[in-house]
Length: 144
Image 1 (spheres, rainbow, N blue to C red):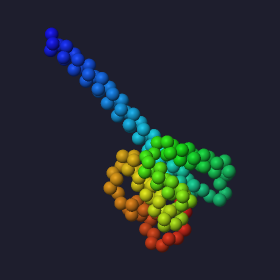
Image 2: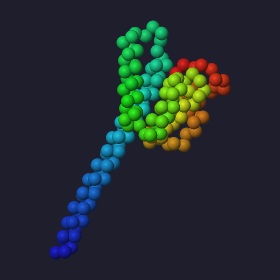
Image 3: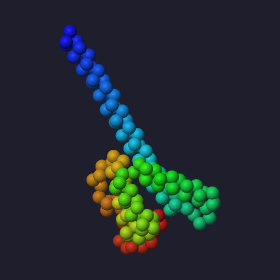
Image 4: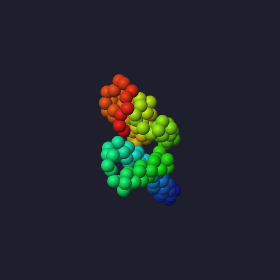
């Protein structure tokens, strides 16, 4: 009789633990998905800003700025402390990649966002800079 009770108790405890662990893992996945989407949306908006033509329609410009603000807000809500701090550094520099320091701040922010999204953190900042900006020695104004 004791063996049956212990077996039933063990199964019940196992089921409860499995429920809570599964729920926790699903919650973490959902949170990571929200964070990654916010990061991706922001980078997409930055690219759209860089591609704006001088004759862009006011509605198009407003829409891009609205999407950018939305992505920034979600980064503030879901982003890691490191990502928000790197974002703030980039914003303090004028949120532009026209200077070497601005490009470095943006690239650092991308590296942190990449790590937060579950990608391998072992990529060198210099490699990301080459992919994002090309190989640039001089500190010349660039669009982005």
